[in-house]
Amino acid sequence: MSQGTENPAKRESFSSRIGFLLVSAGCAVGIGNVWRFPFVTGQNGGGVFVLFYILFLILLGIPAFTMELAVGRNSKKSAMGAFRQLEPAGTHWHLNGYLSFAGNYLLMMYYTIVAGWMFAYFFKFIKGDFTKGMTQGQVQGVFDSLTGSPEQMVVWLAITVVLGFLCVSFGVQKGLEKISKYMMSALFLLIVVLAIHSCMESGAAKGVSFYLKPDFHRASSQGIWNVIVAAMNQSFFTLSIGISSMEIFGSYMDDSHSIPGEAIRITAMDTFVAIMAGLIIFPACFSYGIQPDAGPSLIFVTLPNVFLNMAGGRVWGSLFFVFMSFASFSTVIAVFENIMANSMETFHISRTKAAIINCVLMFALCLPCAFGFNLWSGAFANTPMGNILGFEDFLLSNIVLPVGALIYVLFCCTKRGWGPENYFSEINKGKGTHFSRGLLHYFRTGLPALILIILVSGLVTYFQ
Image 1 (cartoon, helix red, strand yellow):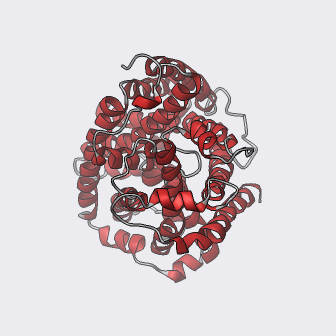
Image 2 (tube, one colour; image 1 turned 30 degrees about the horizontal axis):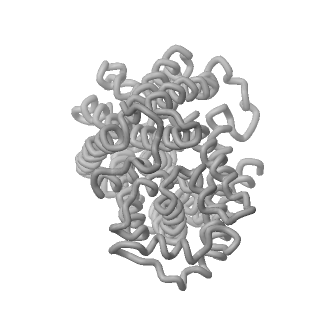
Image 3 (cartoon, helix red, strand yellow; image 1 turned 135 degrees about the horizontal axis):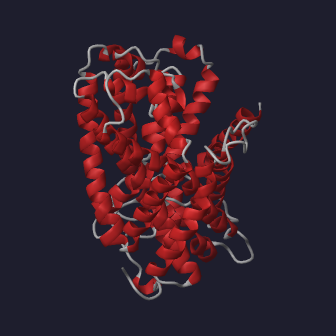
């Protein structure tokens, strides 16, 4: 572990470009890809949703992504210091640094809970808690016994938080980068193996057709506008744009490659994982007569029952939840690094001290969500959010992320902020794909409009 205070002149960086790409992809790849994407796709009619999802990644995700990376690379600071350094005199853009810092805590206050569920399910498959012949109700009972037990919830939460901060305590290269390289490499291998196996099941062709063949008649039953808005939300959510989760990795970048090119590569890796997750889940669902629109319970209730009916199901179930654990934990350590960097720069403390303090603080902040399924299950029970996890996710996904992203767009593309001249100059440094300055009009009008649609539609959906 490093000692002493963080010195800007000796700022840590990635040892290689592949390290930057894999760590950044690891932050983007997470529960949004492997849990949320499949069930939202199933609820919104399959192929048409996927088509719009990819479209909005291009129109919305990649441009907003470049803005976070640009602010980070130019300032060489975490979000709180970056806005303060780049903002024009007399302005208050630096307040978004505080919003971003709080947003990272808020994300981890419930994300670590779900990541703990992934670890728990891997352990349960290995231990034999899932056996062939279990009914859907019995599988549901395993999940209910996990979430209904304060002791189990706290244990898996503690494992996730302690292990996460232990990883980042070793520094960018020896901790975050090294661990992410191994974990992301294993994740890519596992997802290909699982997808191939799932696509070899007897009814797989119907699942692939539902998933990847656009059927506007089927999508119209959900309402085309609803499908479009859902795709827009998912493309935005998957990259976690708006809370500076990616900004910190921009601050570790060098100038050898252009930011748009790197943003496209990271988004492509993120999308590959999401698409492959669907190729695991939909063929399996159709092969065993499971509805693909099962919702959030798809991973923890529906899929275990699917695996149990497969030959060698215990092995395949274990491998699936190893993959899910890697996907979720890669985001955990990436966001923890963001929290660590902000803490070290703001309070001038060592990495070791930042890890210890934030580990204790994060564990305490996560307890309400852990207890929201048992001891405090009445909280928010009669609201659209349903429970504490739903409330925290609502605040982040529907308010903090879109508001933060809108601020980044205005900061980079208006003269009252950092300004378009500085933004375009920064992103087009180095070799690779460059953005034309002719895109500025779209960035000033189209991007804010799309983000406002996400903000308003999210609020309307929850309170309709």
